[in-house]
Amino acid sequence: MKYFNYFILISLFATAFISCEKKGAAEPECGCGTATTGTITDRDAVYVGDGQFVILPIGGTGSYNFGWACDVDTSWQALEELDKANYTISGNWKRRCIPPGDYHLMRAGELIEITKISAK
Image (tube, rainbow, N blue to C red; front, side):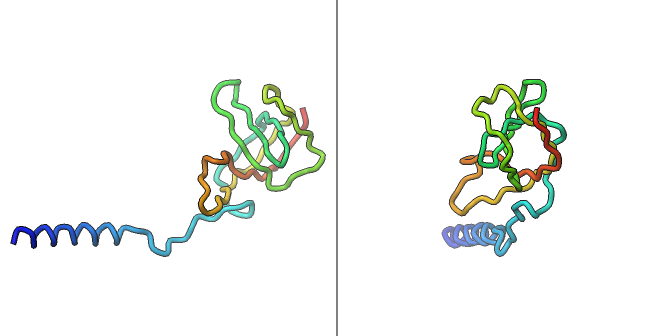
């Protein structure tokens, strides 16, 4: 009888665990044509090429942000040094699509729909 009670208890936990899984849950939308997840306004940035910007911390303290432009302009000039911004940008953050089997941190940053850009 003691083992039967354990069996019932384990079965209840297993059923609860399985029922908590998200079956058929839709993945959050991603890509440039989706909802805005945040904004940036008049931030100093360095264009490093291939559509990627490094957005410098405000006041020189804090962490860098990284963003891939939704629409790349071939006239943007890339810099290799991150110590001085070559653009000021404003825009809308969009959720980046992560390929299956890839981890979000393997390629930091999100998509950015640039609404305003000016060379420094």
